[in-house]
Image 1: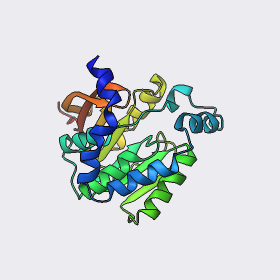
Image 2: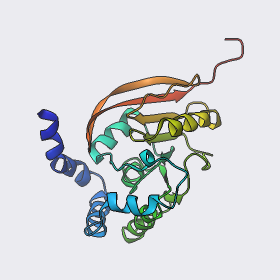
Image 3: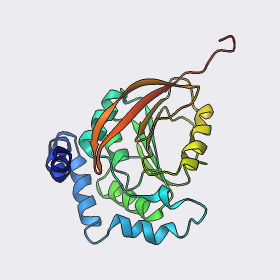
Length: 219
């Protein structure tokens, strides 16, 4: 019962974070205006048909609330000098939050073009600089160069997609932090740093934060 109540009152929990972070209220207002007559789930249904080689599971809708995202950024110790990369960024809210809350470079990679089109319009109309980028790409193939904070909300991805993404850990530099929501990531070069449970748009969900640590040859 508590979880249901927390989900229903989620929008009220958001406002202290929205008002605390400079320009985030402008971003959120633009989201409301742009999506006033658009349903994200309908957008997914329309566009997913153009990507037949990916499982339907990879396109389920769910977002990380701002207050939860801010907590994850704090736990992962994201700083201004970091390069944040959201793989499967959806409408891009976590990318905006990372850049505005920490001052870091923030990129979002998303295959559904309408999400990136609208996110870039919001970026332009909110007069935000190139710390933010929204890229039309497949996160299984995109360039990971420079990214030292990876964010994945992978609760809805197929097992095959999660396995293929884990194959890319070897491309990440030592010390890269990986924030994973909904699924534990098991790879010999990922060392668990922190874990817990937080409120998301679909309910309370587990998260894990890892650091890339390469095993030495003599170990």
